[in-house]
Image (cartoon, rainbow, N blue to C red; front, top):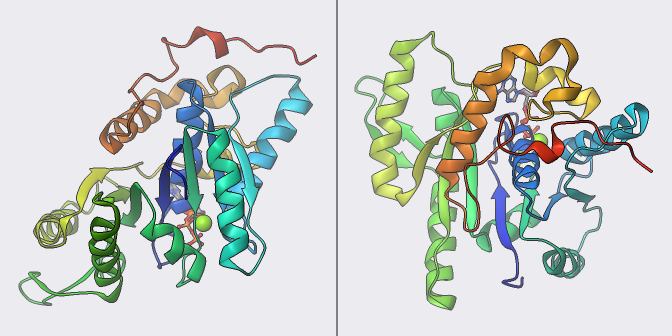
Length: 274
Ligand SMILES: Nc1ncnc2c1ncn2[C@@H]1O[C@H](COP(=O)(O)OP(=O)(O)OP(=O)(O)O)[C@@H](O)[C@H]1O
Ligand SMILES: [Mg+2]
């Protein structure tokens, strides 16, 4: 992979933790900041992020509007050489190249994970998700053991540091957070804090549990596309704020925490497509 783009890999071998949802929202947010962004969807069967952005294109056409749109592609081949070719092509064209990986062990996901600049692992506030990174004692909730996946990332980072002296910024992001279940949440957060020191990842806040993240998929819109949301527009200031926080905590090079609302008027009004 070339160094021309910053590579952000969304990975978690467990399914349904929010990789695609987070990847699409981060991609759109970066596009709103004026960056050139692309997503490669590495799950040719589900192709969630690919379909999300395809829906976004269709909405632009249907409503005759223009919203910031990342480039997107789905990887459907079966060799690493083909993937490298696609990655090389894409990284010449963009500032940020995002990878949405499948929720299972997958050779392409492993390949891109070892080459990430930023590796984002979304988890839900549940010990079922946590188990992927480490196992906890059933009585004390202290971390007993690292999981296979954490070991894998650990090895990847070591190899990376040896080969080019850089490191992978591994970020564990808490997705679908809720204000209920405070007790369980506290245990998870303290187990994560313990593990983050042992394994060396950063723990950051992600998106909270909101219907809007599910509802907008068919239109391909996000809560950043405020003028086009109709009845959904007003109630999602908090959602925009949490996305802004997420971007800030990712601490990406060249990125800021500017996001639309007030700051980016260029996309605040629908623009006619020629
Ligand atoms: N913050 C959220 N609030 C509400 N629903 C969410 C949130 N994040 C994800 N979801 C929903 O949870 C489900 C799984 O999310 P998503 O598809 O992003 O996970 P994934 O990790 O990409 O899954 P897979 O491993 O199958 O690729 C989807 O129905 C999605 O709409
Ligand atoms: Mg997915």
